[in-house]
Image (cartoon, rainbow, N blue to C red):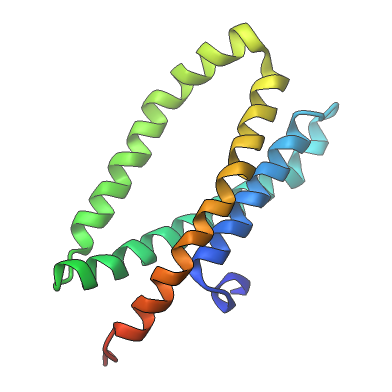
Length: 137
């Protein structure tokens, strides 16, 4: 419930920073027990990002298409998740072999941290969206 006090774009920003930070900790783990907290943070952050992105996309769909097109948005989300599960292991295998696990994880962490500020560009769109939405019963 903590993330609902902020706007959705800011919760995506914090979540991506959390994922990047947790991934950087995973790169330096030396014992199995040290993986518990980073994986908890990654799971929580992915859940918060998923909720924020889907609700924001559904709101944009309401405004841009002037109808409720939630099924299209959720189908697009599921297709992206399926593509990630299908292509992710192949991509990981291609990058881990030449670069190694630690370098690949640190690169992924830096990519998440570098991508996080771009989610803040959605804040003006979200503010305009909340002003233009009519009250629903």
